[in-house]
Image (cartoon, rainbow, N blue to C red; front, side, top):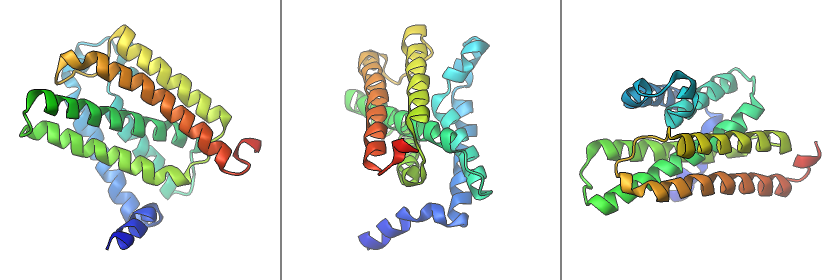
Length: 200
């Protein structure tokens, strides 16, 4: 059973029906996410909006990636940026909510569980799409620059998402910066491991 599931997941983006389902789920997540950020966006200057609703933004980006994927028109550089965001913000949210559950003991909060599950989904879809990426030094370093800027906007300017437990700000801030660097290093490592990637 485990082998069958592993085989299914490894090929899920080769089945157009599943690609469409995943695209629809991401569009639904995008809409829900923007509603979740409604209050914060209303209190945030418009110029900072691109850096505010991180998770719904990258769910939307992945929907765009999949639309072009279905049309056989790949957005290779955009796909790398999107992968980076799915992993970074998906794991950040899981980390943040897990800290909240541990600190509060409130493990029956339905909204937090929905957020947790949906962001595990972000990590999973990013991980499963990874093998289709075509990355190079340019799109990796551009992605790094974007997410370093995003971390600056979140934790210096102060547009990070509302936290369920504000006392955890130092921990989630550290996780955000470390994850940016870790994903960058991972992509560089994988680029060197994939024969000839950085020679194209």
